[in-house]
Image 1 (cartoon, helix red, strand yellow):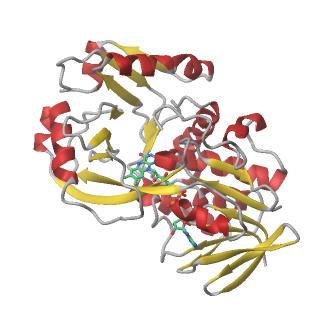
Image 2 (image 1 turned 60 degrees about the vertical axis):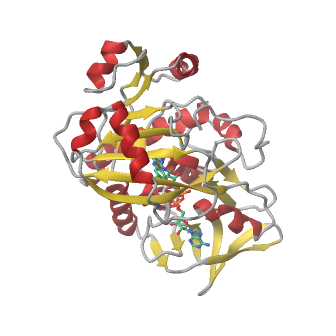
Length: 384
Ligand SMILES: Cc1cc2nc3c(=O)[nH]c(=O)nc-3n(C[C@H](O)[C@H](O)[C@H](O)COP(=O)(O)OP(=O)(O)OC[C@H]3O[C@@H](n4cnc5c(N)ncnc54)[C@H](O)[C@@H]3O)c2cc1C
């Protein structure tokens, strides 16, 4: 018997276990993989921004930024935190309007984001291609951290708080008695619990379907890579939201990590639905061309490693967070799309507060937009 079973030691499950244990709960984490963070968590390139257009996501990511930026001070562990900001260089009028159109809501929620002219962008992104550059946005309080270092540190902190990890164990069924959750059945036995948190990432729908709850999360595949380290020259995470001329990329983004490596990925066009995590031979030539067109000096980079992971997508691009209707004690934190690393800690702290004390740590109304009961087809998050 445990207080709560967290299904999935991923970008949201692992920090949830940490904050739930900090709330004094006895936590058991079950993951099908032999180690934590082997799903999409370790595939993330580490970008963390609060500069979204949906108030709930802004609030959650502001909370995450607090957690990432103070983590080393609190735990003494290096997680590669770098407050270099996020920069969107702009070459098209429509992108300028889209990004400037989000300023009112971003400023209303206290985010430091501004428009820089061409010279300003050239200073922030040294060596950027100036042809047709109109300027761009810079949000100085955003940043990045290492998903690998953060996952490892979180695991250690969880262990110190007494969290039990049951690895190489697969949850097959959520167990209920009279509309109340009573535990889970795994391929190794039954774990009784007062609460269950479904943080199973791209598999969250299958888990929820075992108690007949429809949860629209479906994965698509994304590739990424990292170079050998070079001298620090680039502060922000850079996002180029133009589709590529080759017709295969919707946008691409990259940054320089705390140790000098350049880390990068693109959004394929069209998206590649499914759970395929095998790397392709297409990715490197395409991303290399996009990186060199934007910053010609990247021709000197030596690429060290490529990988592929999944975005657990929802129809409206917003995560699904809260207690599942009609199944008391069954919570969900899933559908984090391409932003689960940045939202994970904020969601986790709020979820833990909600489960242990009855209300999230942020204002409750913010969470209505993320409710498992919302209309998933009513709107779409800008830049989802
Ligand atoms: C190439 C790439 C780059 C990215 N870059 C960024 C970025 O810069 N910033 C950002 O914020 N996000 C980024 N992301 C997105 C981010 O990685 C995901 O949003 C996030 O990992 C999703 O977190 P999750 O906890 O929902 O899922 P996961 O991290 O996948 O965790 C789910 C866990 O559940 C386990 N599980 C599933 N089913 C079961 C079961 N039945 N029983 C037991 N265990 C189970 C899995 O093994 C897994 O460990 C990127 C993703 C990719 C692929």
